[in-house]
Amino acid sequence: MEPLSHKDYPVTYIANPTNNAVITSNGVKNVAVAQAGLLYNQARLDVSGSVNPTRWTTGQTINTVFLDATNINQQSTNYTPGTHTIASYSYTPVSNKSRIIVEYGANYIITGFNNDLFVSYIIVDSTTIAKREQFYENQPGGGGRSSTLFPICGSITNNGTAARNIIVSLVVTSDSVDFTGRNNAYDSFIRITEISQ
Image (cartoon, rainbow, N blue to C red; front, side, top):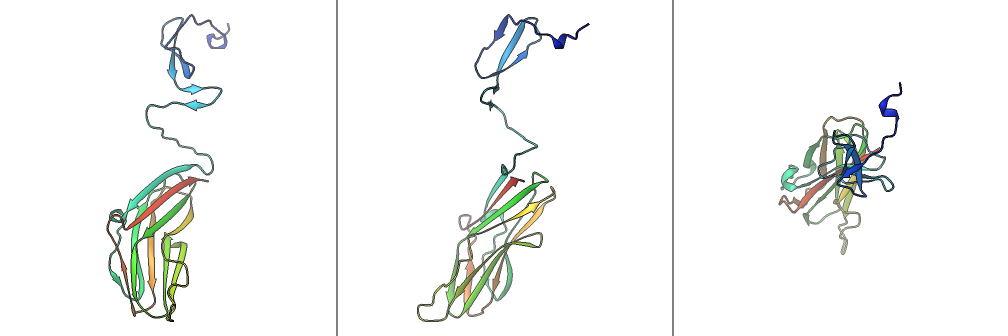
């Protein structure tokens, strides 16, 4: 005997007809219900709730987090010569096969004069993923003769779902200047974008 599922049966009534629908049974003989959903020729999906995918195509955004100064342990201080952590955050990846892009921007002021060099880094779990240098020359009209410290951006390959520790670090090389960071909510940010690999 042929299974019922292998045969075509006529449908005499469709409830809620629409051009953009998935046809399902309502459990009543000869009655099917059209529900908003897939349009087969355009592959459009209408969803009234949230979508929680577990797979992504390469390059697709998996997750984005935007944090202001109040969320990233932003430090506001006059930095002395040496290496300083000026912001940090712990990010937990959504996927175990992704690339994590970290962007940091900040407002700061530098006073003083000398041949002064400052170096900024983004470090993820002890791996440096970005570096910028800002150099001032102690000459008439010397000013800045380099890139600036911020914004700074880098990325790292991710192969797990354990938390990743993100640190923004600053190296000050001269004691003749006053480097002051700001920590109002609008003065700095970290944006983390996780994309599929």
